[in-house]
Image (cartoon, rainbow, N blue to C red; front, side):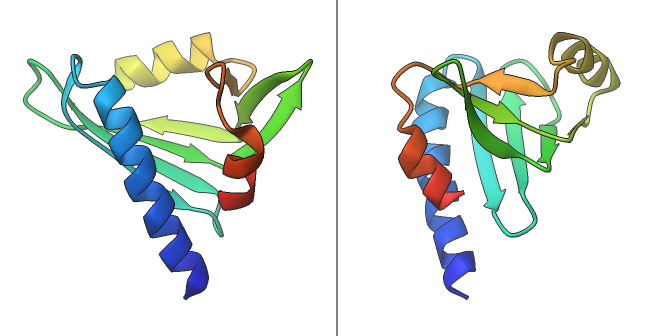
Length: 111
């Protein structure tokens, strides 16, 4: 129960923070965290699109590589086939650098 409450709080905070950064690209953005299953689910309504885009990050973990905070994952699923192919190519190492200034230690304890 505490885990679920924590995941909801983190999801709401992340949705608010990332939603502001993505407002020029998306009419709507939502992030759900399931820290027990290690799954992140992002849903967005890109401006000009008629359907939501859903991205699932499975088996995620946070690590540092050479001082850079990274999000690593086992699998990435995207609701749009072309986007799935693009991200599989761009993120072939199954990792994504987090922005400079990301509170790595705090986030790692929360998710």
